[in-house]
Amino acid sequence: MNRQLLVISIGPVQSFIAAARKTEDLWSGSHLLSHLARKAIGFLFQKGEEQHRQVEMVYPAVTKDDLRKSCPQRERDAASLPNRFVALIEGEPREVAVLARQTVEEVRNELIDLCHEAIRRVFPKDMEKTGLYQQAEKQVDSSLEFFWALENLPDDRSFEEARLEVERRLAAVKNNRSYPPHDQRGLICTICGERDALCAETPNADDPIGEMRRKLRKTWDNRTSPFRQYEGAEEGEGRIRDGEFLCALCLCKRALRELFGKKPFPSVHKIARGQTYYAILMMDGDDMGQWISGEKALETCTFRNPLDTYREISRRLSRFAKHTVPNIVEEYDGELVYAGGDDVLAFVPFYNALPLARKLRQAFSDSGQGLDAKATASMGIVIAYCKDPLYHMLNRARGLEKKAKSFRRKNGPSKDAFALAYLARSGEQREVVLPWLLDLQKPDEWTTSHLEYLMDSVKSEISSTFLFTFSQSFLPLLPRKEEREEGKLSVFEEGDPRNEELLEVELKRLLRRALKESAQEAQAESLAKSLVKLHQVVPTSFQFIQLLEILRSLGVKEREGISAATG
Image (cartoon, rainbow, N blue to C red; front, side, top):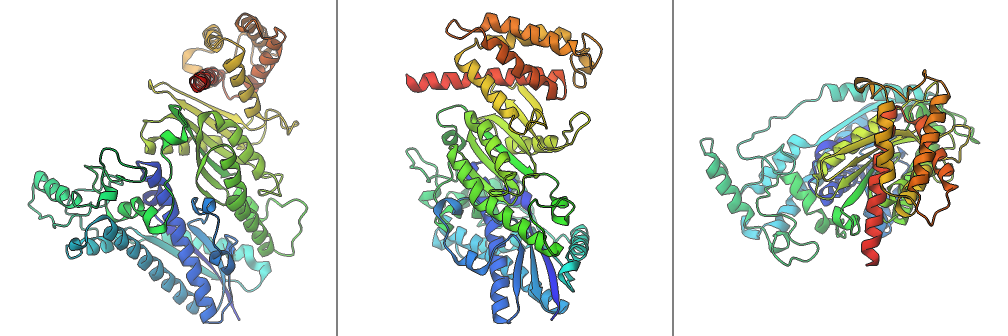
């Protein structure tokens, strides 16, 4: 019997995940998207059993038994299924196409049912006849994106050709998507800003803004007590505040905890653990297309055909997402939003950001925990103030991840880097891009280890003013102001080793003055060498100054936090 390679993509990711004012919105959007993927995969397995046709999930590596098993509470709290998956299904193209269309309808109905249930939980029963359900159905139909494409797979050896062809077809389908009519009559949702807020009274075309707001307030003032905001509310209550008017999808996300019986996702204040700053980590595997195509080969593994290679990569990525990442994030007191294959999004106390980042990157290149010894990943890390808008911080983390992907060593490989930004409460912003390894010939010398060492020194052994003093002394030695973003220290010609020697001498001089009496003066040399190594790999000397200011600020804040905790 023929086999078809079926690729399915569910979205939109932006509306489901990125439109978030609270961490719970972010978690709910990720969880909802993962749930719809689970529903689609489960439906394909079910139809396979009913029609006596073989259905295999090639990516992600899940089986019927995996979906049926109950997972530990911690794993259920993080989304672990990607919104895009690949299946191998027995049948003729026409038969599998029918199955794909049925899957679309199944996912649509599931999302509508969830939106209906959210409305039932948030509003009293007497509002069932107001048209809220019909409004929700229209919003699902106009918002849900479900794309699929298939290609015949004659044999396992032809997998790569079939995969490339089906990817081209899926891209063509997305490029030729149709946009259903969206009848917008009222005021938009205060969360996503895309769809109308649910309103029990249908707005008229000639209603003034004031009348529209009155109708919205009347609708949302009727929400049930667990969703009201009131003084003395317990954890988990009052999640829809006065003045928040939500569309069906954003309401579904806000009520998802009740729909699935989940524990609350903590706020950034709780994640910060008494501090005023926290960290967002966003990681993505490098060159995944080359791994999937076989251009990059797994070590110690030989496979008969490209399909077996793809299966093994999928298995390893699923293990990394389901087991490795949750364990590591928990170890550093973090909260995992999602881990889908090589993609990770997590929150963590700022003082644990660097060790957690290093541990995730190390695990990804461990064939027993992640993908492969040669595999690399890039990451964006934002140290943010707790009261800054969450969606701005998420956008910044995405931008940093892209900058890390663009990193290139001088005369060396690209990517395999992290971009770190510190966004101060005062509005000051500092940013730097660094490779994970200081020296490619020394695989155990991690850049983050040097950063942690310097932060610990600021915290306990050297004056917090040292890095600031050095920055002021170092600035006159930088290239002219308009060239700072591109140049390195240039007292002598570029590439002259005396530049680095001068840097080390100045560092040692200032460190000897800054070290506290209890510290050994000999440590000045060790600290200076760490800083010089960082200067060698940082793209520009101006970024090096930015890095010093980040380390100073974070070291001081951690020291202040320790002092406050010990009283």
